[in-house]
Image (tube, rainbow, N blue to C red):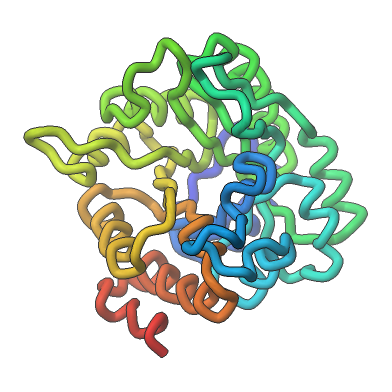
Length: 304
């Protein structure tokens, strides 16, 4: 089973579904290329504004996300459950991860500690999957550790992960330390705590922001501690804001080979580009994650 860990809360009659879902999003490897597309709520229009010179005109259309996912080479597309419902019939071949909670970026942490409230539950995912026959392979949930509302998010996530596993679905946590109690959101020691907490909650994958470098250690060197703290939960790093392709691919390569991460969760670095460029970039990323290509070889896809 290529090293798949089947949690004990996956009942025997759901084990094959869990294996199939895991294989579908990891392409029979133990790594995940997650195309993150939850920004229509999370970032509102900031990530899609065509007046921003760094953002291509294609990005304004929500369907751009689905075109990239269907024509590109990704593991799975993560977005809100009802956005999947809006476009799923037109794009039935995509492997989907359904986000169950979200918040906008309008209220800053200085005004109020962040809370990502539940919008849907696992039963809604199971119903849509059954009625639509779409490939919904798992759930995604955001937790803001350090927020005064972390107890609500932790409680929701713990129950949802158990329910997802009962249905043979994969569970992915977005773990972001954030709030007035958090001095440094990208402190490696704190992020190690976040991945350890994700493991204790039962997550199969955990998405974090890459740690900040220190005077003695680079960001990727510090990832080793964070990955170790996650135990048998796989760690993937967020892609973050758009940067030059060569820099992005080099960073990802080092995260995989030095830091020991198991993939990436990238959105803006892909969908803020034109459709042809975005599709080409997914192939370059996939070459790194699923075929152990070096950045120079992966760049061939972008230059074609």
